[in-house]
Length: 193
Image (tube, rainbow, N blue to C red; front, side, top):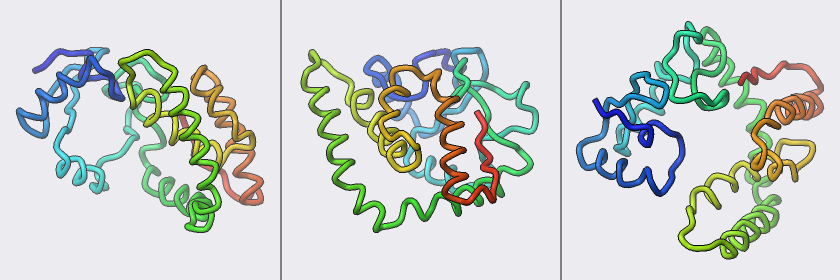
């Protein structure tokens, strides 16, 4: 088993890439030990990842969250999320609530704002000293910014969330309020962290 914190972290960083490339060259699925000492199985092969994403038996929840394996200490990304017994129904309900906000017309209307956000991030990237991490500077913050633009009452909040992840709890409360406004308060979104 590989014991490597670099393999267990989410995201991509320059120091992690050589380890991931080495794993990819050795096959699509690998047993590793996470930063907190739990067993994990990163999947590095495209087809294997697609199959697992399409497999309804796999999810983000766990029947016994306090005893679930964790990848790290992060409250948001380190372990299971949601209600195990209702995960599928919650997912379907969340999709049905959010899908109208991701319609083709809404996406076309949002295009100028997304282009402005991307241009701003690229300008920020150009001001940095080389080498830079494209994932950290663009690939991670851009989707967060776009989702904030779509769903949060304060679209500019994505910058604050990026700089201070502890603000996520307030953002979730704001998202719940915003969703209540969008849905007339008829549903209770299953947002858990």
